[in-house]
Structures are given as structure tokens and as C-alpha cells.
Image 1: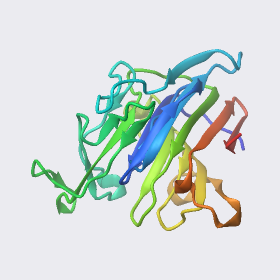
Image 2 (image 1 turned 90 degrees about the horizontal axis):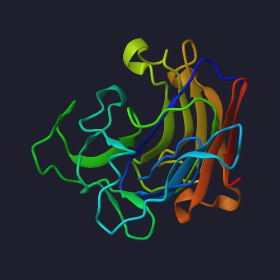
Image 3 (image 1 turned 180 degrees about the vertical axis):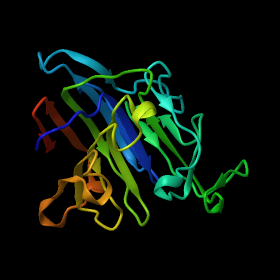
Length: 236
């Protein structure tokens, strides 16, 4: 699959109830969601051993993510008509003391948050590396355990670092992994850009054999991004 003038910044988003993430690799690393647990990393294409960004989420249980690596987004997401409000702090995103970041969606509204549909019903967390880390090309991966359930939409993705200037989809987007709750055994990898965005994105799904669900175990989701191609892999 060819890649246009796409992503430089890695961003991770998790819209669900429980998830863990851990980072290891060499281009840029992504984090998780309670939805489950995970780890991530990014490596330079010139050397598979040269990690340019990694996060193993080492730290005491209940502590926040490293603010030098991650930006925590806040607010609702009216463009996707999501029902949760993204919060700061570690109520919805915290380390578990075992090398995982856990993103937890909660049915609550402790601060009268307002969403596009009125008073918000849920809170969750969404993290990205905007202003912290950016890179074109290489290997990007995260080891994650995604959540299970209706309404879940865990995702691990990248956006062009010029999105503030050119907007979406001109910035480009690489969805390394997306899952929707009604397809527990399937994940999707998709490329978005001018003329092939939204439902017209270029990509494909991968389904586990034997009726397995991704929420049952940790899996490693990755891409290898070159100037003329993008290759998606699940568990190597």
C-alpha cells in the first residue's frame, strides 16, 4: 500500500472502559487504554536497533504518564460523535505498577462536563505525542490488550504534524489498529488522506482464527513505514 505525504506524529486514542499499554520499538511509541494493557515504541528505519521513542510505563501504581513524552487531550470529540469526555490527571489514565498504562472509561460525570449531545455520560482518556515527538518513516508498534464490550472503540494511530496548518484529511492519518466493540475478533488498519478519508480510507481488516477475541490476550500491533509503502502486522 503506497503512502502519500503522511504522518509524522504518533497519537494514541482509546475510547472504552479498560485497557493497558506498554511501549517498545523504534519509531514512536503509543500507549494504551482500561480497556486492557500495553507498551509501545518507535525505531529509525536505518537501524532496526535504534529506538527513537520508547515507553515501558515503569512507575508506581496510580501514577501519571511521563509528561515529557505524552500530552493528555481534554474535552469531547464532536467530530466523531463520541459520548465520553476526555479528562486530564490519572483518574482515567494511570500506570498499574507492572509496566502498563491503563486507560479506563467510566460511566460518570464528576465535574458537570458538557458534550455535543448535552451533559456527558462518560469519561475516558486520550494521549498523543504532539509537541513531544515526531518522526517520518520507521517501525512503530505497541503491545496492547484491548477492551471488550458494546460501544468500545480502542485505537492506535498517527496524524501528520502539520494538521494545525492544513487540517484533516490533508495532514494524513495512519490507523495502526482500530477495533469496534461489535467485532471482538477483528482489527482494522487504514490510511486516510485527501480523496480517501473517512469511509473511503484505504485499508483492510484482520480477524483472529478460531473465533478468538483480541480482548482475551495481549497483542502487538505494528507498521513498517517506508517512503513508498506501509506494511501492517499483528503479532509479528
